[in-house]
Image (cartoon, rainbow, N blue to C red; front, side, top):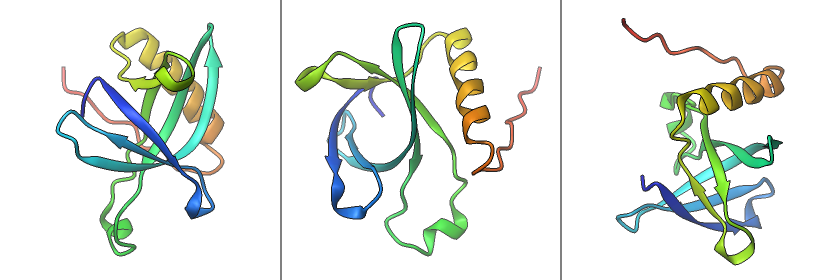
Length: 110
């Protein structure tokens, strides 16, 4: 996906669904799980939405955390490039969402 993505809200689902368009013009739908403000910056935690309910069984449920850049009509979501910032914000979201979700930490090889 692109570093910044156009946002379009779709309120027909009854939950907060966000459609993001990547650099190739492909649309991807996400459920907005949570939003926070931390150190004057805004962040969102998203969960990819499967097109078909049967896909939920195979989905890995990967949480996507993006930073809100800009305001109003110029608002875009961007990847968090700074590892320390990403780790700090990820920890906050994981704590806030831990009652609703069972998170598994990815293991990295050293």
